[in-house]
Length: 182
Ligand code: THU
Ligand code: ZN
Image 1 (cartoon, protein in one colour):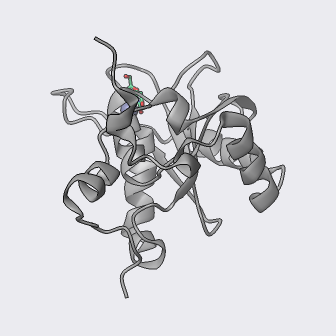
Image 2 (cartoon, rainbow, N blue to C red):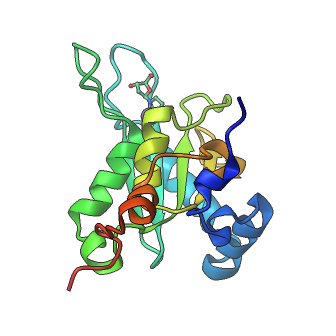
């Protein structure tokens, strides 16, 4: 049975901007060099990752809607399941400085993942869910190990029909954390 798109009618058109539109919007708003700057920052922190078990060091950058960049790295645990991912860490680092209070829940304009070896990589499902808590849609980019840009896409393309705060807003009229706190 196919998904009936009507059950996702709470997803507004602006949340589903096509990939090219959103990428152009980011460049217009933050400048053509912004994703490269994020790639360089993620590459700089990548070697701080603690990944003795997988030997797969990841760096990540988050661009906020008011143009701040936060970084993060993966940090593993011997029991494995307590591992923190780089994107998750960058998002939590941003939150810990007060971005939710300033900007509201949806503070991410773009997120970039720097793979350890420049081969193709992408935020995992766990990270996509966390990103979707903080962006209705955003640019999702990949950087190389040495700070170049490898690939650019969007959250709505790689994580469509997700379970999000918009589901609550639509179904139950609850509007949790969407506005900046005063
Ligand atoms: N990893 C991330 O940091 N982000 C992802 O989204 C994919 C996976 C980390 C977790 C683990 O430390 C290592 O990469 C190998 O899976
Ligand atoms: Zn992840």
